[in-house]
Image 1 (cartoon, rainbow, N blue to C red):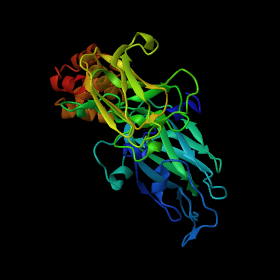
Image 2 (image 1 turned 120 degrees about the vertical axis):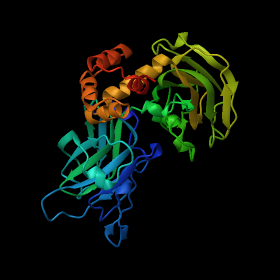
Image 3 (image 1 turned 90 degrees about the vertical axis):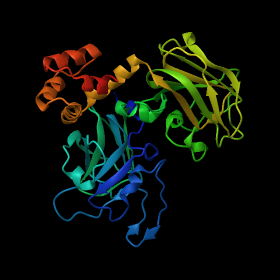
Image 4 (image 1 turned 60 degrees about the horizontal axis):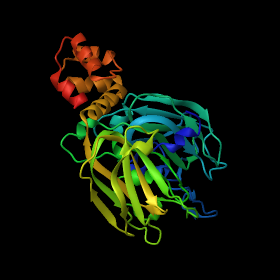
Length: 389
């Protein structure tokens, strides 16, 4: 993945997903929480507080001893990191000379003290930074992480931190719960759209309600005979039962109609089944629709007529057995070794047997998991249920 391609992936640290800056060693001039503020950085020159110029970012004091400064971020959606943007916007004479990024996978809700003792993995080695500029760094790591630690060398200010990647949800939370197959937190993502002039299409898949139009997806005004559309890759193969198309806040610019289709071949949307035919939409309204009968799909497309915007898209349904198997194996294969062993021991395997199973990864299918369990000389019914559903 190139230095710019990863920026189209979801920001795993986004506040809208539940990301949080949970600790920093210093924030004398500007608060650590600013790192995850949505939107672009703002700056008002000659605006001073008791500690100096006010910055919309995180800024530490000038370091007078060896070492470096750091901030720890809990990802809103755990996943595989493909790149980070360490943005130093408006930090010109006070940006760090270099940065590095570490990541960790910690189950549960660890305290800052527990995070300090975590097994941190370097995902970005110490790298030079430019001031007043985005700094894009591709990351190559196939593991699923829950936290990142931004290190700045030696000190200074960073405006924003974006951690782009692929969400890898814990499928154990899917059992017995209504599942939004399109939700970003569950692994859904926008793969393409016709237009993103006013706002990003991935906003449609964020949790919660939009607070304004800027938190939805809005296209430019069309001046031709075509229409706008957005395509979504679902968390995995599933059957869609209910649909929410929410035009809240879109009053003079909501689409007049929409149509929903779905399929399993993203390269041939013309062959997809129609889940909901062309249907009238109202402005500033949360619309709910039932899908009476449908085949399993892995992708969905919303066509809006002729253009406009809406706030949220929800596709509620259930995973197929094959979809649940793939999502479970994908999660298990990406767990760091210690986490994967812990999952299996909690399911009743001995530590020795768990180590044997984990050593056989990647487990690309159900037969691979069963063969690994056979190699460990255990039946592993509970482990099979956890991983495969």
